Length: 142
Image 1 (cartoon, helix red, strand yellow):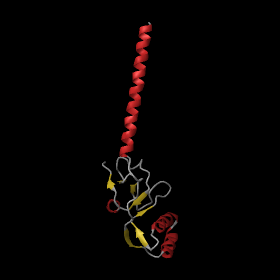
Image 2 (cartoon, rainbow, N blue to C red):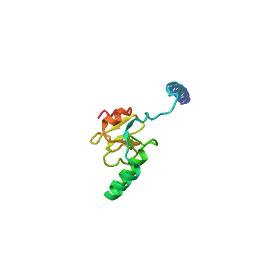
Image 3 (tube, helix red, strand yellow):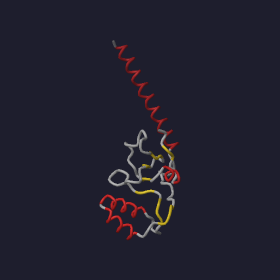
Image 4 (tube, rainbow, N blue to C red):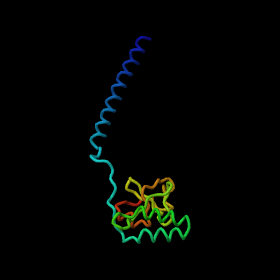
């Protein structure tokens, strides 16, 4: 019985040492492959001049609440120099009408009908896949 206990103790000690060695090697590998800088957004790409903010807001208010929400999103996405950008910010966790393509920090964009489209939380919304690709994103594989 004592011999069996000694063997179990030796196995436990070697198992713990082996586990510690594996964790140390994994930590070393993670440190060696960690990027120097955090994730960054691709640069903004000017698309075309935006209409005057007052005219867009007035037309949106006349069209109803749904259109005014979209117009507000478009105005907030417009650059300071009056240049419209190719994407808009999501509204209430989803993309507004007219901007169905979802993109996030992974560098991948998802189109409606894609495998992970419904699960994707957008950080940018694009009108079409070409605009997302022009901004540096790649399409999802499925």
